[in-house]
Length: 199
Image 1 (cartoon, rainbow, N blue to C red):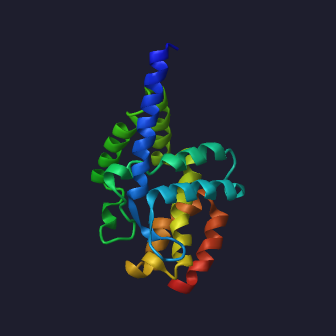
Image 2: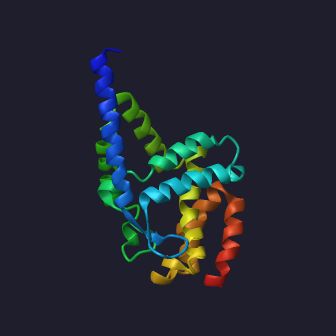
C-alpha cells in the first residue's frame, strides 16, 4: 500500500476512534450499580463486552463470543447522534419506533462512514446484524443488552423501575422475552431476583 494510502487509512481510523469517544458523554437512564450517578453509554458497552466474556456459558449452540463482543462494543455508537431512548421511560413508546430506527440508521451511516470503506462496511454489517437480532450471535448479544440494566437496577435498589413505575408485565414483555430468547437459564435466574420488586 502506498505511503499516502496508509496515512489516509490511519487518519480515518483515528477520526472514527475520536468520534467514538463521544459515546462516553451520552447518559443513560440506568445508574451505576451503586446508584451514585447515571451510567454513560461507553461504560454500558464495555460492561456488556465483559458480560459476554463471563456469561459465555449461557450462550446457545453456534454462538461465537468474539463476534458477540464486537457487536456489543459498537451497538450503541448510534447514540452519539440519537441519544439513549430508555425502554421504560415516559417516552418508552419511542423505543424501536420507525422514527428512532431511521435516526439510528442515519447515525450508523455517518459514524461508520468515517472509517476506511472496507472497515466501515464490516462494522456497519455487524451493527445491522445486531439490530436484526436473527443470528445466534445477535440474539445472545441482545439478551445481554437487556439483562445488564436489570442487574444495575437490582444492585441500586430498584433504580429506574421505581423512577418509571415499571410493572412486572412490562419487565417481562420489554426485557424478559428478549433475554429468554437468547439465554433462557440466565433469565430464569435473574427473574427470580426481581420478584422482591414485582411480587
